[in-house]
Image (cartoon, rainbow, N blue to C red; front, side):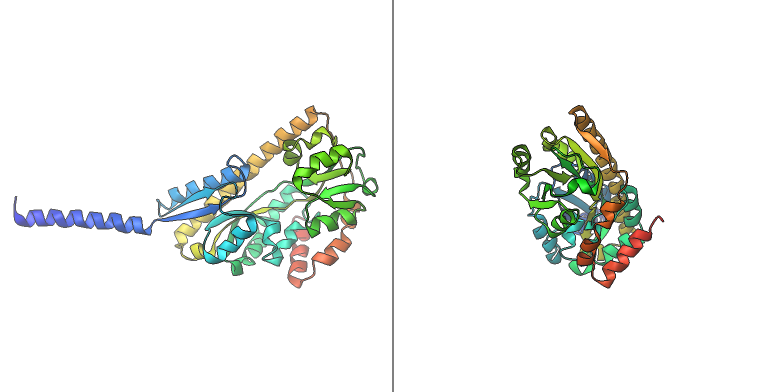
Length: 329
């Protein structure tokens, strides 16, 4: 074996080792924040997103999802994007509105006519405008998940119209938009901690509450509240966001991988959520809950005029509202 051959082989090995080191140095592990438990629809979809970007970028990017709010509460996590402390997450549109006011529009009562209308709005140009509104907070919204539809449930009174809500004590989260919505319908908004709702329904402290069907079922509130009115006053979506710092550093090809992975994960989340809603509805029906379809939602919508006057004040928000209402018409 000649000395030159040995030197040549050594050079090849050294070059191979350098390429491995360089490749490892270029690989980026992204930190994902998630509020929910691992088997929640959004959690499963986030894991799919992380796996898909790892495969699609051939390992240049991968992601680890930290469930159950391990990296802090939602507000803290949103703030961490400014410091690149978190790389991707799923946040409620309502929570994002505290930072980017344009996002408050998706938290308005009856702003979406149906889940299908919401998806049509957010998967199009309006969703891009809402994503642009997050740029100052170092976020890009790549896709939109559903948080379900919130409706009223009551103990003694079946709510079939606005008149049936008059004077009822309805539990709401301690947030202005919830209080304003319920009071505009003539009920008495009663902010309570979520853990107090079951006992308060049982003892008559409140006459009802509002939430999506899976939450109504999983908390067993249906054991004391047997009427569920499908008014769907709130459909607040959730945004799958990535750090703008990460996004700006991606090649055009990798951006395509990220966006396609996000949109595919959204389809997964929506499908899983629909399955969960159907399973909850079956449990509720077997437990004797009466589902009440609202024949005419217009009086509910008309009652929201003062809520919109209070919360939709900027020209940007008013333009978004007009475009949302025009979508699909």
